[in-house]
Length: 167
Image (cartoon, rainbow, N blue to C red; front, side, top):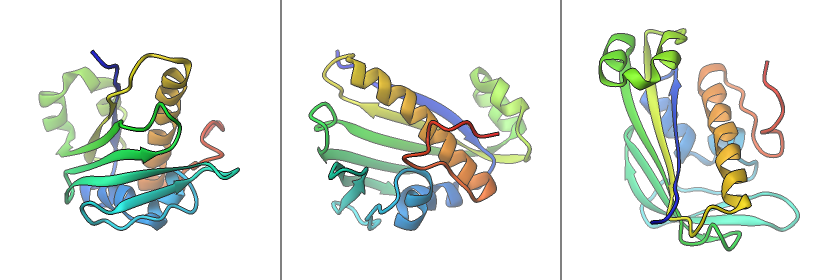
């Protein structure tokens, strides 16, 4: 069985705003990596530069407005190639989220808005649990926090600032 990275983050923003932050190159540049080149079209190639000539390329394999975004990695570090990145967006209010997802009650209780979007994130089909897998798991958590900050405050912490403390 192949290991997968899984995260769940509650964002105090509409699913529409979160979806655009994941599918729009200007927005992606504000929370993931500056210089992202993306067209929200099925089977298009999304380009994500990370400095020193290193980049990742993803095929956009699924787009359901305000619900689902999926990419398939075709270029990057060897361990990334062949992996899938999935963002599932679920809208709701505090009451419905608590009823459906009691496992994230801590996040729900800290919501500053009545309505929010739950982002279920999966980066799947890794070949093994290597140090890179562990580092990417941690860093995806930081980037998802950056996505949350962008959607809630208008300012994210994209690469290379994702590990800075956000107070």
